[in-house]
Length: 116
Image (cartoon, rainbow, N blue to C red; front, side, top):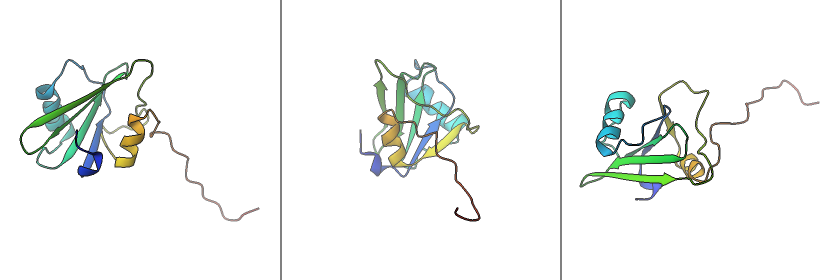
């Protein structure tokens, strides 16, 4: 797989996917449900209901590529409170997600008038 920094956009599909889908089925999801554009250098990321399998699809100059990672003893963190089906993430966040770090839980931004 090419380095993540060679892609201009990374999009996570929030819904769980039947991982029997391969390039044809996943590319249909990208086009029909995510509104994705394979003409752009984008990655599209999917997981199964158990969150033990991750598939990433993209199109390069000569055709489609599919990358897969299966966890043996853990689960991928996945968004729960986000309603959009397609979520754009930063390269740094994708690297963290692949390491098993939950990128979906962030500190709330605090606002205050004075410091005690």
